[in-house]
Image (cartoon, rainbow, N blue to C red):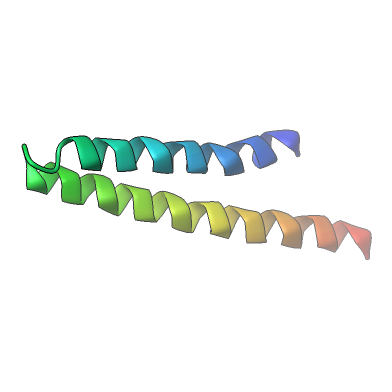
Length: 63
């Protein structure tokens, strides 16, 4: 269960990496920056999805 919690916060690390990549390449290659922004948004979505899923899984065991 600790691994799932660690992986949940790993998505936030990837958000930071993709945002850095998008900002650093904004003037060089816009298409690459847009792709990095898309992956950052996807990582944010996955963070909240995994957080909700983990809470639901923990609450199911408490019944």
